[in-house]
Length: 197
Image (cartoon, rainbow, N blue to C red):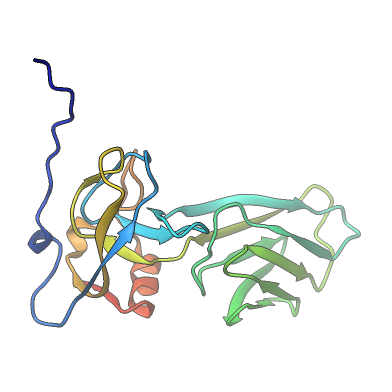
């Protein structure tokens, strides 16, 4: 008799968590058939309530200046957006989040960001030159760190550290080519009360 199945290796929760402080571990739904989530993977809860790998977006083009328009708007592709991480560069002006949902430009421009839906708008102090790309950098929301390796073809739920200390050396962003989080992401994790040491 033939048995069809997959061999699955699971890492242990103790390899992710640091002792000393309380840790909150939650069980959460995972996006089905979305690959193998390794232990230490930073995850985001998507609009349907399933965890997906955190996405780091660098230098994505949102619009293009024409030398006349000062107002631009649109919707970011990867949502929800982690508060405080969005940076929009519109020619000589850089927009950063100065309070929840409020963007301020370095030359006096204004704007807004909807963290959940990714809708953004900016009004520049001066029109970006013709052909100048308006670009953005941001990460999706940090909702936790996977405590164990999970194959989403076999399991539809997994455990995450939602609060507490985790080992910095095991943290990962992405599945295909995992990368270590940089200082900005570590800072965002601290705001979410997940401490990488």
